[in-house]
Image 1 (cartoon, rainbow, N blue to C red):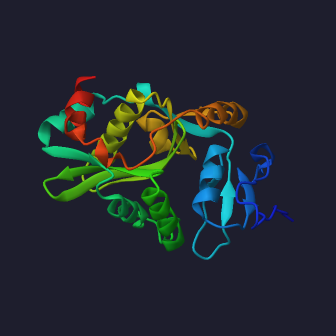
Image 2: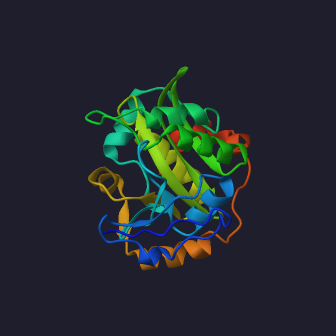
Length: 244
């Protein structure tokens, strides 16, 4: 029988040691608590994230190994460069956060549901209003064709999800986000759980102990709090990224 720790409702910053997470299912650490901004920020700073379906209790995870993008290694490959030459896209940041989250929440082909349940959408919107959650949007005229969103804690960016409505939309959003973050000395985008698609995009795996040691340092560094829409010079990011 699996016996999971129940989070203390009165101590939103307290979590079990993520190194004690279960091996099967990989990374399951605790249950309960809430999705308050204080608890969520504390979780991400400790390498822990919520992940649950609508019919499940609130579950918290810290898998081993951990999937990570290096922001300096994320540059467009030849096929993406060709794609960029064929389209007229523009990029914004924090202009359509709710739209990006809802697009990411839409069930993917072959899936009957989504882990981005209404309670999660509401929690991320609170973090966005407080200047901790951010989105990158890719537009074709007035149509949203791709995007990515996540949470910034210190100088760590925790990617949550991305989507495409046109080929290359999510990759362009990811590349633009990486370029912006490396300008601010954010070295990593935490991609959480490994899958073949993330590895194909350039993600790498780290043992959880090494991941936790690194993010403990990153989370304490000064970041970029507040709404990132004020950095509106992103219109050139695609062209700049294509030139990298």
